Length: 177
Image 1: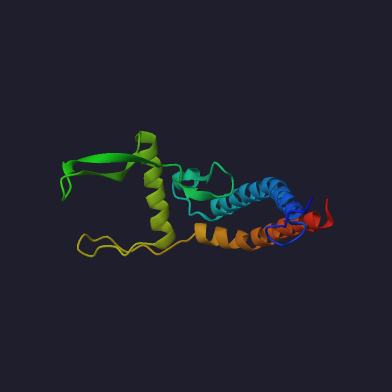
Image 2 (image 1 turned 90 degrees about the horizontal axis):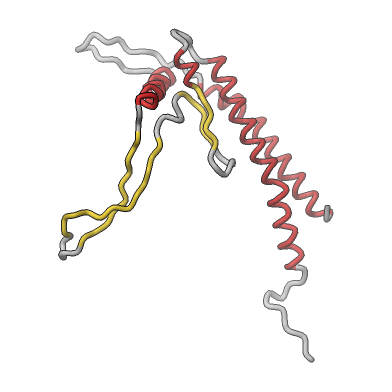
């Protein structure tokens, strides 16, 4: 019986695929933990840098991590709005008489979320400043950044740690561990 020719012409492809799957399993938890650690470090630094008037802005700084754990956001009022997408059909007829569907976005806000959304905008105005309005006698407010410096302070060590995690995973895979 003749041997079946290999499709790719390369040997060890199955073994490589198995190693790559194992790399994914081994690195996933470490990367998720690093993302969580980094987001909370940014939150901690932002709390130290935020200008305190009444304390409500500092209290509104929070962390929201995605369901997969690989991304997240940190800042005032980040949990304020949930955007719900749904497919709808427009009742009007299209150009050729057929109904057309589109995706609509709806933002659900309750009273608590409205307060969080206000904190988001307050944080934005403090972070970037305002230009004021001379007609209404509203003076411009200078920028007093707190989120940007908190991110910059943690960006370097997060990159170094992520590189170290990936290098360790690749080294383990290369040695067959």
